[in-house]
Image 1 (spheres, helix red, strand yellow):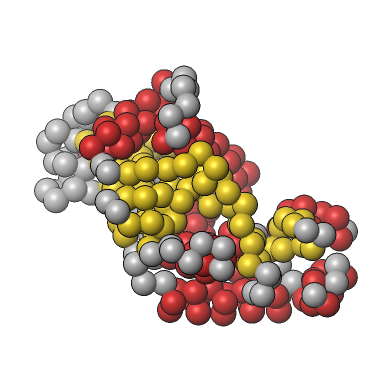
Image 2 (cartoon, one colour; image 1 turned 180 degrees about the vertical axis):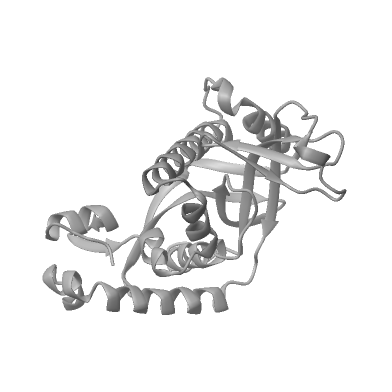
Length: 255
C-alpha cells in the first residue's frame, strides 16, 4: 500500500477534481494489479534507487514521444529532439500511409465516468479507415494485454457522451537496433540497453554487429471491450478496498 502524508497528498497523487468531485485516475487504479516483469526488473538492478532513476528516465522519454507525436497528428509544427528522431520518423511514415484523422480538441482529453466514479486522460479519439474509436499510444517493447483494461475504462466513460464510438487501438512507437548477424534487438531506453533474442542463435560472447537506431510502429485494434471492462471494475473494487481509509476520509463513498 502506498504511503500518503495526508488527504491532500492522496487526492493529488491519484486523481482529478471534476465538477467539485474527486475521481481516481484509471492508471492509478490499475497499479493494484501485479506486474511480475516490473518486479523482476527492480530485482535485477543493483539498487532500488538505480531502478527508480532508470524508470523515471524511461517515462520522460515516453512522454516526450507522446507530446511530439500528438502535435504531428493535429498538424502543429514541432521540433523533433535527436534522441527520439528514429521513433518519430517511423510514426510520420506510418501516419502518412494510414487513413487516420484526429481532431485537436480530441487529443489529451480529460474524461470521467460519473456512475463508476473514475477519470482519465485519453491520448486521442481517432477516425481510422472509417472506424471511430479510442487511440492509445504506448512506447513499450511490446503491446501488453494489460493495456486493454485501461482502454476499456476510457471507452466506457465516453459512450454516454459519444455513443458512436466503435473500437479502440493501441499504437506502439519505439526505437531499436538490430544485430546484422543474429537478428537480436537492442533497445536503449532510460539509460538501459536491453537485448532481446532474435530467430537465430545469439552471437557468441555477445559479439553483435548493431545497425543504426531505427524506429518501430505497430498498431493493433481491440474492438471488443466488455470483458476487459468487467476486469477493470474488479481491479477498481480491490483498489477501493486497499485505499478504504483515505477514500472514507475524503468522502468518496458519499457521492
